[in-house]
Length: 230
Image (tube, rainbow, N blue to C red; front, side):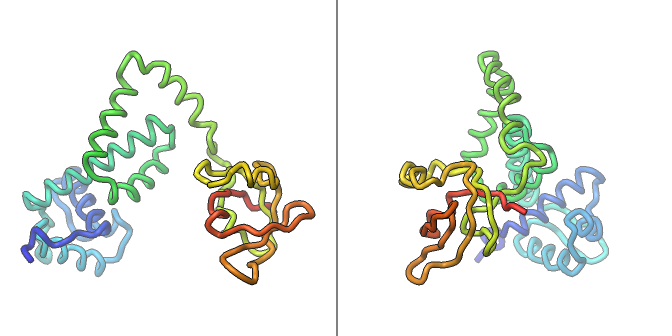
């Protein structure tokens, strides 16, 4: 297999992105700078740089700065463009704080590809700049911060509720099949549930709702989001 056709993992993409950013900031990327930026050990950096060099994305020799090849620079630019598009979407449209936006972008940028990136960028620019989107901008500024505001308790899916712990049902995904049936059973936001254990047969869990025991498929329980109560 030719060097340029060797696959690149999400971890190696992180290294490529970091190298590009370091070079942009200071013209040179040394292994120690890469280790500090990514919070990894020197041996990990060495292994990653060898893998990138094997793919002809960087030039790497001991005791000399790391340099991007033409292919590496092009690949890094694509990765950074994806990151910035995602970050802008999270910060400017979803009103997520910058640190959380960067963390989410780092996780998602490895799976999102073109043409989604370009279409997302076009959407962001339209919402930010078009006069006929002024009302939408005002709505987003008011509405987004109210959805799971900063400081809100962390939510977990019902199937992850610890044994014998109680949780308050906060949110039910609209993708749940038969959502009205579950609502009729009392599984609505505000209900207090207690995990009772696993049913003897099948992929079922038992929960207690007030004085009633209910059995749910694990696959359905994943659509219910609760906050654990003290």
